[in-house]
Structures are given as structure tokens and as C-alpha cells.
Image 1: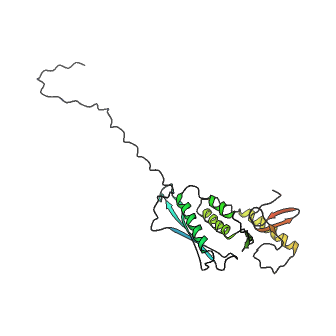
Image 2: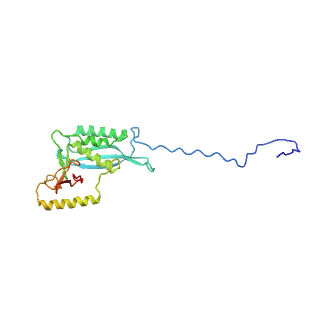
Length: 230
């Protein structure tokens, strides 16, 4: 539309269109979650758990303390990661290699990444003099292997390894089978060699526990539930 100007122009300004909208604000950049790495400084406070073991190859009990660090606390990416390990005992016979082992394991923890491989590596160490049975009838091929078993237990507790705990139904079935087996055997034993399972039970290849019994031609482990009959 044409507009006639009747007066002298003394100034002007550009009027913005009413429909013009402000540019949208930039979306906030989401911070990447912190992953465990060796540059993370040790905080003043760490969550610690201490495990006691009493291997027959050592004169005194050993106390294994694993300290954890909490990363990305208060966010959806919060995680608990092992940071360091200490092993203490009154016995000095294993002092040197125990100190060396804890330093190496702690260094691996702080390096980050998947540290669960440590469990398999430690548990596969065999004592040339033979292993031993710990309380409950579980066979340990060496003291190092039992330390590995403790680390495995801890990693399961903080969620880095999947727990293989049996269901209540499986536990009930195994308890019934054990009671039936013991009733059929009627075997009393004074052997205090450390097994809570029947005296004539054999070693389980899956969980290394003397808990395998044979009933009706079927070998079943009363500890982990492994069965040759499926």
C-alpha cells in the first residue's frame, strides 16, 4: 500500500516485525560421566569393607580391606569403584609378597577399565605344595586364590560382577535332596575337616566345593546346584 508523506522527514527508525521471535537458547551441554582413571586424586573419605580369612597355611588370620570411591555421586551415572586394597596380619611370613600384591592390585584398580579380570587371574594361582579346604568345604588352590575369591565377593557386592546366588526354590530343592541323601546314608562322622556337606561328598568342578552327591544315578552339587542331569 502506498502512503503519501506530507511532512518533512527529520529522522527514521526501522521497526521490527511483530512476528519476529527471539532466537532459541542453545541447549545445555551434558557433562560426560567421570570414568575411573589414574588421574583421579584420592579423596579424604573412601568407603571401606574388611574381610577376614584364616587359611591353614598361615599362622594368623588375614584381614583384607578394600576401599571404594564413588564416582558421579548424585547423578544417574553414580557408581562405586574399587580404589585400593590393604592386607594386614600378625604373621610376617608372607609380608613381602603380600605388600607387593596389594600395590599391584591397587594400581590396577586406579587405572580404571574392566578390573574383573583380576579375579580369574588370582584364582588360577596354584600352590606347588597343594591347596587347602576352607570352612564349608570349598577348595582353595592357594592363598593367592583365596585373596582372589575375596575380591570376587566384593566386586559382586558393589555390582561390578553378576551375582550367581541361587533362587529360593533351588535352595529348597537342594535342602530336600540333601536331607533325603543323609537319611539314606545314615552316616555319622566325627571328621571336623571343614565340610558342612556329607562326609562322602566329592569335589564339584564348577564351584570347587566337596558337595557333590549321587542320588538315583544323578550327580548334584549341594553348594551351587550344578547337576549332570540338567
